[in-house]
Image (cartoon, rainbow, N blue to C red; front, side):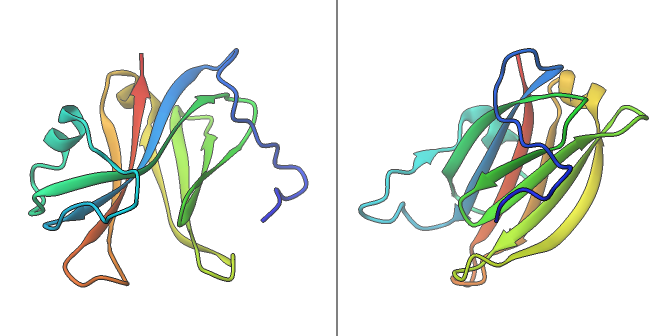
Length: 146
């Protein structure tokens, strides 16, 4: 879906106020599917997900963005899209959208998280069940990068 008028898209890292890593991770008790190049979630990410019950967490897509206070950013993550925008009160507004096979985009959740918390290394994690495989889950993980 192309960006809407008046909503610039920026993915570069130059001149940004904060660098973020966004990951789409899959939680499962199974192994990674054959033929897919999935990496295990790193130790720090696994530690943040320790309260969940799954044995394995596979990173489906990972990307870095430079967060710029002057523009909204749209970040595609495989089956979903994340819109990022800073607010005037020191928060990051996150809009999570699902994308179906017909490429239709549907808003799933909107939330805010402290920019200072992200700068200190806290994570923002949005979780949901896997509609295709019972007993699995998806996680969108947002973290500040040094």
